[in-house]
Image (spheres, rainbow, N blue to C red):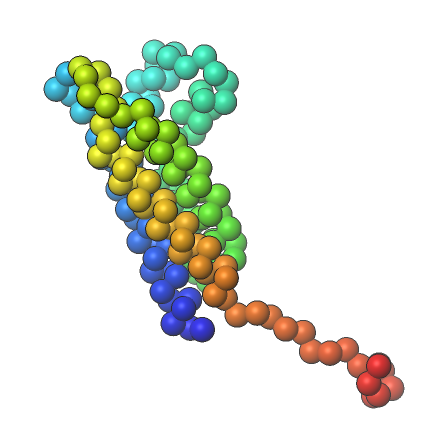
Length: 155
């Protein structure tokens, strides 16, 4: 069981690192200018391009992606396996969904979405999700000892 936990820890932290690296790769282009996801989120927020409240909130919260990735990895490394795996699962699904939506919308043209960043982020999210779910499944089962009556006999 110990080897399984180590493998899932390595898979999850590697996936989180790739996910994080993908957010710093080019996501958007305008002419010859490439922008990573944080620059694009800041630009969209300053220009008020989104009129949907949920999308605007997600855009403002995008800056917290590195902090959340570090929190997930820290919890896993410090031994809070189930809490870290659960948080990593939710985090990977959220960021992976955004990356998938951006990847589906990618295309050529003068202004558009570059596939490099979203594809790398999505790949990292998939690996992190697989590692986190594997960590939840591969963990040892805690069994309780049977409860005997106070008189010493079996129930």
